[in-house]
Image (spheres, rainbow, N blue to C red):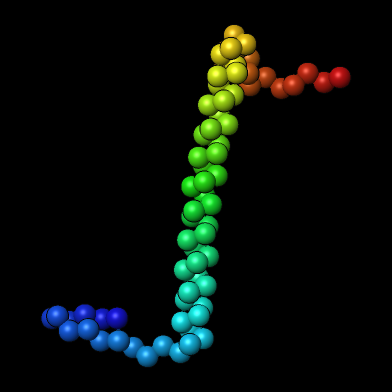
Length: 70
């Protein structure tokens, strides 16, 4: 829609185009919703790890050491 001096002009849109716009909108909304959710989950896991490390008396460097093999 274009607006000029308080008037609104609408352009005709086929049903096919309207459906594709709706699908694109939903896809983007889902992507960013999931992105935020994943970020929050990652932060929660990081905080739990930091608490566990603190309880074990580990420093950041010790907590980042690779697992011993064998």
